[in-house]
Length: 113
Length: 120
Image (spheres, rainbow over the protein chains, first blue to last red):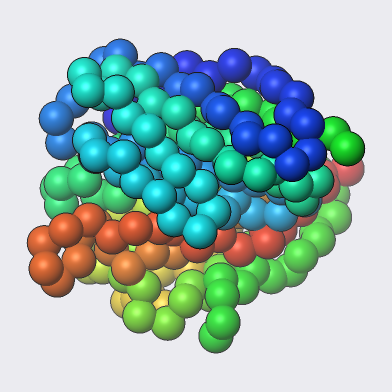
């Protein structure tokens, strides 16, 4: 799976949008971009994923650049409960490669009141 | 069950002893993964099961580590002759599988709460 680069940490004000960047310059055509987060003392939680189109769900939006070399996860109105480590993962989605998730260091997001 | 269940939630063992960690995946999920997370660090992939295919063992750190899964049900991760560096949270996850029936990739892996292993 392609390597991803994320800032190690960032702060966000409660109620404001949080924009989390991720670089994946070596991504290949059959790799998807996935985001997970891990709240302290819990297992990781899926947030969103995409291939090349921007995606939105009830938790977040995912903006993928046209060249697919980077993406941004947007939490539209951050709450204190969004404080967590956010992992950006690119992942092969062909059957032979299986479904392995390879986690990097992630971004530690602290939402402040 | 409602989610991925792991047991025990906490395990303290003496150095040199063997331990078994259990994972009950979500019913119907063909894929099952084990990860290790040391204190303050990211998730380290250990092993992946997909249906009846040979497991991907590429992340197992040594031959003291092994895992089994019978069919598409329970999995056990066994650590033999535990060492202090094995202390970590061991996380299990399951998902529907590599591809959905319509050929599109499935969406997410569901994680359990983990087993916190402390080797003293």
